[in-house]
Image 1: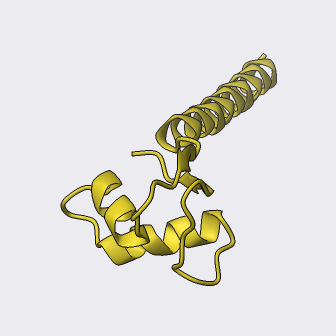
Image 2: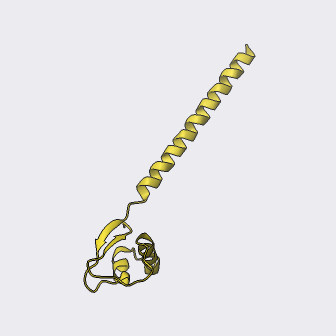
Image 3: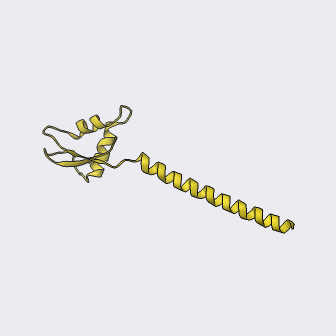
Length: 93
């Protein structure tokens, strides 16, 4: 009788552990997907610079140079030169 109860308790423990693990995995994925937004398109206007664009979209506590580096990474840019009409992806704010 004792072995039967012990077996039941072990199965219940395994089931609860598995359910908790699944919950933690799913909740982690949901948080990751909602916290990171997809980049949005931006059309370069005459006179635009990466500094101005990055300054407009960044928070006050974020270094503009970090945002510029992210814009360059998203668009595979080797230079900071922009052309009027050029399409860019910019980080979502």
